[in-house]
Amino acid sequence: MLPRAVLVERPTEYTELLARHGTREQARFFLHARDRTLEEVEGRHRALAEARASVLAAIPSDWRRAAVARPELDRFLFEPDDVVVVLGQDGLVANVAKYLDGQPVIGLNLEPGVLVHHLPGAAADLLADVAAGRAPLEHRTMAAARLDDGQELLALNEIFVGHVSHQSARYALRVGERAERQSSSGLIVATGTGGTGWAASIHRERHSSLRLPAPDEDALSFFVREPWPSAATGTELTEGLLAGPAALEVQCEMNEGGVVFGDGIEADHLTLDWGQRVEVRVAGSKLRLAR
Image (tube, rainbow, N blue to C red; front, side, top):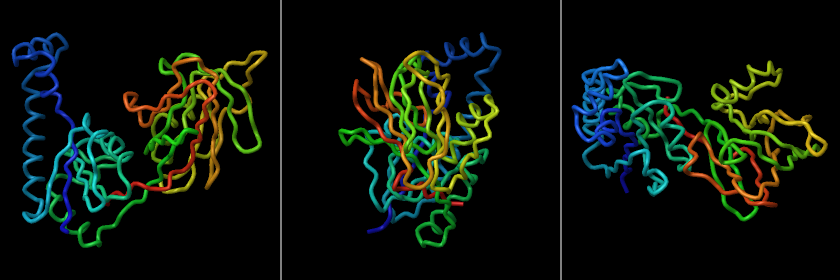
């Protein structure tokens, strides 16, 4: 069977403004109040629409094809032989990665970034190279969180464990032979890809000497956010490296509000109830990203 090209995109700012405000003139008024112009937003919308049309035209005529918007990713069924084409910013690659199982990803944008390496005009050559198996691929490590009831969640950048409101979360933390009961504003477990984002901010703020892993390394870093010392909770086990099969285990001590989510997508989360355990470790699958 021939491959299926799946175009992943997100609504443009112009589309979202129309959905929120109803008409162009109301959108114009909203933007004017913020010292912005509708023409600027419409210009970016047209440029992306042209790029979308060129990408769709680059898909071989005998291939199957599908398109999915970011809000629909958790309901879309990817197939094993899909070639995934992401048209948008780096964050959109992270958004889709958690729903894949080894399918190759081509990242395209009008302004290439860390994960979207190519301009839309390169789509035809990239599709041909990926289908023929001659495209160089990055294999980026992902993180997996698994509850003791079998539910699992993947992330390309980082996994957050804590309270849904980001207020104080209470839990017992275990890494190898080390364990500690803690109260904090949650913790994150980051991949090497995520080491340039949220983890990098925490790492820099606390002047940490912890080595952050490379994007293709089978290792994760973890950071506890604002741990609070008390008679019942400690602040000694607040960061570390999880290499190879090593895992971080959290046992929830919150009556309600415990959550686990990945890559900042709070709407797509796992609920962590009192006494429930979650383990976070290197995922078995990796993001395969075309260079």
